Image (spheres, helix red, strand yellow):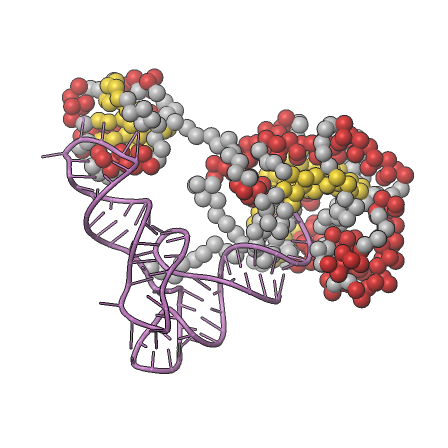
Length: 419
RNA sequence: GUGGCCGUAGUUCAGUUGGCAGAACACCAGGUUGUGGUCCUGGGAGUCGCGGGUUCAAAUCCCGUCGGCCACCCCA
């Protein structure tokens, strides 16, 4: 045997045994998104590197150490495989003038792969897939809540249990800057007690220190000022209304002042949903509002809000919770031939059944009837059609129901109506 | 980038003190010349991750390397 080539590190094949679940989850995603009146958008899986630097943020871990960036042959432009879905959608919306006019509204959803260069572990791959939505043009908290409720409905229909929704607000640009200053002021005297990573972050991205799992950081953050105290009146009101609307809609949630999330573009509301059974990486999806992003990427100032939800993690959580997804399966008819003449006959019958829209298959090699039945059983055939010399002579076929074992003789053209 | 655990048949794994590479399940065939699931019999299947070293002899000991899993960091 020749040298084996393996899938690249951190990538996984979705094999035939798994693909029905993926189809189910993607079907649910589309149904829910379209029910909420979102339209599908498909953007390239790679973009100009500058898009992610300006969009996601230079100081984020994702941009600093997790992007797949390269120059295509003979091309001087640097491109990056997308690490998240929002930046590309915003770029496309601006480029195609979907949000160019004042008051423009746009509601889109996407399903597709994202790429991050990381060490793989449970629930973390270098290629993972997300279902996400983005809503542009509405600054009211009703839009934040619509996105959250859409996301929760996606999980509800998937069968996910034991999930937990946390929400927070970092406020608008001014509130965020103010809180950042307050936090730096609070943490600087304790700088030598922080983890090495957080000492670096103190200068670049101090908010990130809040949700560090390092006990040294957690201790240093004890008694830290809350983001809520730095919120402007407008941001305070926005967040209050988000909470009110969520409560009114019957959603259970918890306000978590340490919730920060990894993208710089969030303003005001942000949220995250976690679920059990995922190991250390327990976030199944999260989102937030990004009212400055469109402008910073060259569009006219337009508010936006959205979420991304990891499909691998959802599948993982569902599996650990032993939830059976509603997979769709066609009735299968298996053709068994006894003898060469019968096999030739069955090829013609096979073609006719398929033309009639019936899922059918047969073993092309001349094996014993017993073997053919074994294969039919393994393939979970619902019916088996048996044809041998006597059936050929009579111009009939035998139709066997594999669940009941019942057999009847019918004319070939009657098969479709007898299933 | 850092740490821990692990690489033996398609799969899950056993392999003692270094002494002929095994089991179960799966697969194929037969038992039944035309009938699946249960049962019985037989069969095929391996670069013991890879490379080097020690040894009369290495799956086993040593070194290196690659890969996987889990955790840190961070996120979906």
